[in-house]
Amino acid sequence: MTEHTARFFGLGLGPGDPDYMTVRARKVLESADRLVHFCKRGRRGNARTIADAVVGQSPEREIALVYPVTTEIPADHPEYAAALNPFYEEAASRLLAEVEAGRTVAVLCEGDPFFYGSFMHLWWRLKDKVPTEVVPAVSGMSGAWTRAGAPITWGDDVLTVLPGTLSEAELTRRLSGTDAAVVMKLGRNLPKVRAAISAAGLLERAIYVERATMAQEKIVPLPDLPEDFDAPYFSLIIVPGQGRRV
Image 1 (cartoon, rainbow, N blue to C red):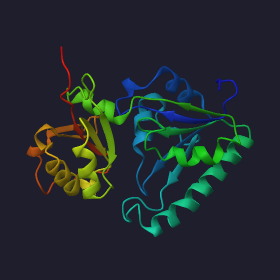
Image 2 (image 1 turned 90 degrees about the horizontal axis):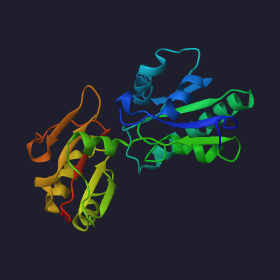
Image 3 (image 1 turned 45 degrees about the vertical axis):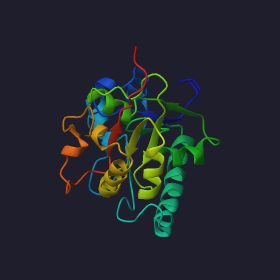
Image 4 (image 1 turned 90 degrees about the vertical axis):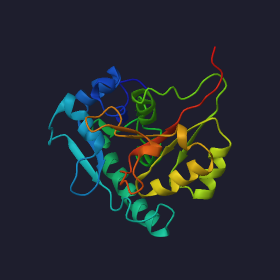
């Protein structure tokens, strides 16, 4: 899809530092008629904050999609899907109307749009209805291992990416069978994830990273992180591989 035909964009803005934004993302960010961002009630979304360095405040262009629920309900609870399904349906209809009115719509995404992104729920509802382009980006995990100075895979290392929402037993099983790992979506899952990493014998290699590349960045070896530490949802743990080196 070219810039002359696309009307609906999934716009990857990178891990946080606007200097890591692609040239393509900047062009779309500056030219789109509507800038859409997901957020919690009463807050600006992380993706919209990243965009500040390029477009600043643009109230006439903005559409905020306020989640009806975030971490208050576990993702596997029936009420979670019951709340989010109509939210995404309504959001997709709203954005479709914008495109049909002749406007270009860009959904701002922290990290890469196709990597654990809320945008994907809009994409599969609209991709066959409007000309669509997804602009890839540096992922949050790439920003994390780079800022931590921890090459994630060497030689034939196998990398496993896991959501912290899995059960402790499943996390332990998968961590025990890999060379390197990234565990996303920490938040209240941190104690469970820490226990699984320890059970898999990986604790001494694990590094906690929060808001990588941003001003509030925090990078701490996992064994040094306090047991009662309150981790935000958008933090992660990396376990670098130890594979072949020459």
